[in-house]
Image (cartoon, rainbow, N blue to C red; front, side, top):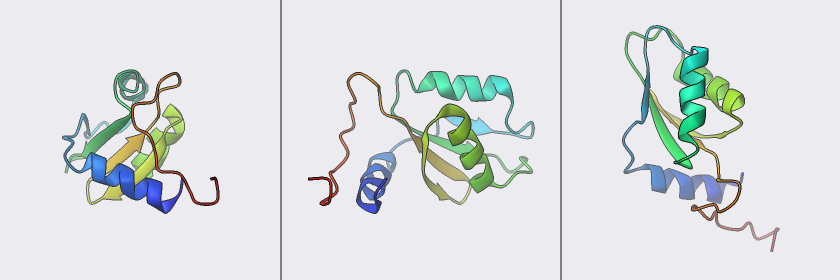
Length: 101
């Protein structure tokens, strides 16, 4: 993913509310499954890490993105953004890289 595409996704996620919150139990298989299922209806989701979670938000974002086959777009403070395009008809069309044209 290029920096231009990442910036575009960040701008789209700016108005999103967190869809999931990671708490003191951190990442469980059920939590990962719920996040993965949310990609059936959302291409871009924001997650929040609560104060009682002992884990680092960046590490959580990397782990969840790997387990859901999504892209970690950004980590800011206790929030992070994940992107996974729909397979058939993606709603979010990323800007093309000049080298790809």
